[in-house]
Length: 125
Image 1 (cartoon, helix red, strand yellow):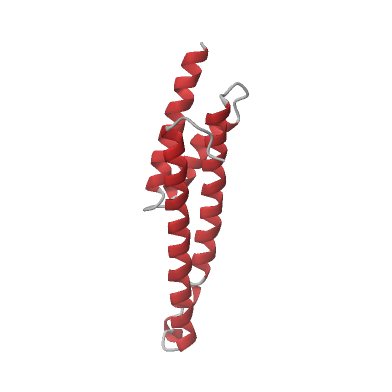
Image 2 (image 1 turned 180 degrees about the vertical axis):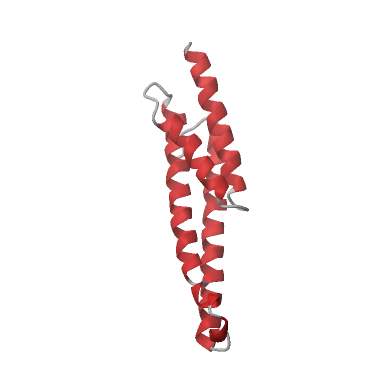
């Protein structure tokens, strides 16, 4: 019984890391990664290292979503076509690209750190 739960938790975490990687390309995958990691984090009898992995994925996906939302705010002036000729709109666009790159690199870095520790079966924190 305990071994079956460990295998189920490992499958959830493996799927969570796959969706966390896919979140680099589409933000919908971030929600799926969060949901799968949340299923492992809510279990009381999970091993410590896999519980820490689930919390790591949840934490970093939330931070990524907040960073991505902040980056998206900088693109709002582009909606108004007649503002496109102003220099401050181009500056907001450049700032949005920079913050978007920061969010993307943050998620890539946290995925690499977490997945390397996951393959070693160690806690990531």
